[in-house]
Length: 372
Image (cartoon, rainbow, N blue to C red; front, side):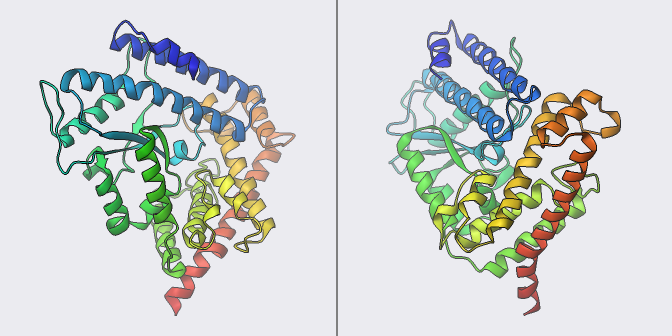
């Protein structure tokens, strides 16, 4: 981090600052990928490494973008701005080609406010422009290329919502209007840059939302309905479509998010943005047998290990028939198998187990409610 900070502290201009960050980010991303391809780093190392890299880049670019807005429009007194990482960014499970799921939240003490520059802006326009400038800093191509695609669909109200949300509106939305899938997504929310004071307010608010008591049967029914809808829209029988196949990434994540929302009111220490770590924290709580939790941890690890390798090695979908021997061997190594056929069998058995566990852990509770 200090290495990057020193590089962007005195850029020639804004464009030069962006290029310096891009060079640094691409170099470090290449290093992480090389360790994965050499079999040195597994998912429990590579995922956090990619996430930490993105976090350092965000923390360098956010003040750079803010300086542009301050120069043009001044500042809003006592205001605060934070960046929240969601999805795989929040869960420290990024891969070489992951988008960044981000949410921006701001706050200020006055009822209404505007900036103090010559071209003053009201608070909504001010933080909208700051967010847009920051997203451009992350995603726009320069002479050094682009860094990340940014996805903001997980913000309150999704595509229909403002690109930046005032803290009071964020709080009201999640307490009164959010769908259950949005609260599931909130289990992976992590503040990655910005004001320390606002970051703590957000952590406290998110913790309160996630630890609220819930009707477990109703929660399970909502999640099963969501999973069935995804199956209709994007379902597949291809075991190498790791996200959407039954027993794949979605099922593992849905099980984890269901358990967190169902039992965090009684066991708040099970909350963690990382899927495998959350399962680990559930051990000994009486939520699930420890051997079941081990199956879930192993599944999360296996799926992410395969994803790390294929995202670095390929630009499109993986097909065993089209892959070279080197890639097949690396995939086998990534899941602790001697040869690719063993790795494929291990994947298929894992997916069968996870599909069964989803039915036993989530769907069975929903069926009881529907049938009562």
